[in-house]
Amino acid sequence: MRQKRKFSSANFTDGESSGIPTLFSVSEQGQKLLDEVKRSGSRARFVIDFDGNNLHAHLEATPKIQQLAVDLKLQFRSELITDGYNIRVVDFSRIHGVEAADLDKLAEALELKNGASVLDLMCGYGEVSAHVLGYAKRSDISIDLSMCDLHKTQLDRIPQNIKSQVSNVTIGDARDLPYPDAQFDAIAIKMGIHEVPQIDQPLIFQQVFRVLKPGGRFVIWGVMSNSGPEQDAFTEQIQKKNELPGYESLIVDRYFTRGEQMLWLFKEAGFINIEDIFQAHFHESTLARLDSELGGDRHKLEELNAFVRRCTPDSIRKEVDFKDEGDSISMKIPNRIFRGFKPE
Ligand SMILES: C[S@@+](CC[C@H](N)C(=O)[O-])C[C@H]1O[C@@H](n2cnc3c(N)ncnc32)[C@H](O)[C@@H]1O
Image (cartoon, rainbow, N blue to C red; front, side, top):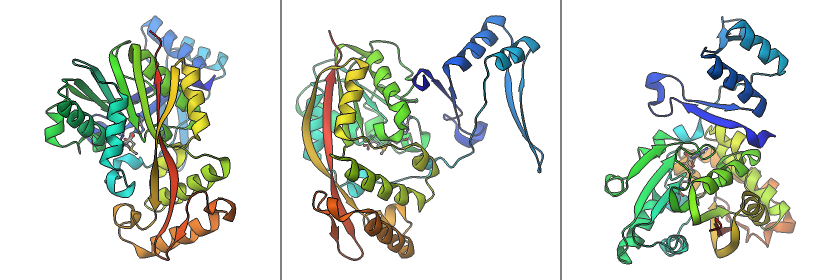
């Protein structure tokens, strides 16, 4: 039921200049209300009014629309929250220990051919695009690359030499892709699925399935724990790491799947020939976060390290190659590349 929600974003393009960036999700029942607004040619305003003491919320619409909202038993939810990706400016190759050879494996998995239409989704500042373009050039293949991410702050960081080689850079939510059906031959998401809540993750797979051509490839690179205890310890550590610099939306939204859950997501959306094609290791080191995410604050690093010691049970320390060197606590969580195909 929740997975039939529709997402809309507003003001993500211009940031604060034209209003607060807003993500609006509408349930299946809620869509009936919006459909009626559209059908009747009227307008609806959801108003939240704060007069310094009290909060009032109401729906400004025709009496008929208001009655429909009552009949549908709708509830309006909202949240004023710090958007982590508007403030998080980090170099993933440094904090995740990503290696160029691994990125080539991802590019290879896309099975690029001359003229292929490719999407780097949840692209951030374009690490994947840079490698895919380099790989295509070395292989003497010409491709048509698109880039999409929800946050302008991240897209603004794409180097000019990458921007100049791609066909478009688009602001969009992976849960409601701004592309027509059957547009792409291959789509890659690196370190992105975990950015949306577990309940929303199937939506990304459904949307990718929709915009892929028949026979198209969907390649995912993600952190995928092997077991529940490993997943819990890693998630708790990352939650704390996000709390210290104030990345509130990341704390609320993120869900890191286990490998088996990722397989299920592919299958449920209709992908076939799903393969676990490569396993690298994600090197999580608390010290690597000091300058990039903790603002160089050693007290925060100590707080993070104390937390990590407490939340990593002895039973999994061997499995994740847990190393405590005082300042730096590191562990290795499987980083895998999965691929699925949209049937011909
Ligand atoms: C961990 S970063 C990875 C960026 C890039 N794929 C890489 O590996 O370098 C996750 C990215 O997902 C983007 N993102 C978060 N939620 C999103 C959503 N709902 N739709 C599209 N992009 C989203 C963030 O803005 C961020 O750039």
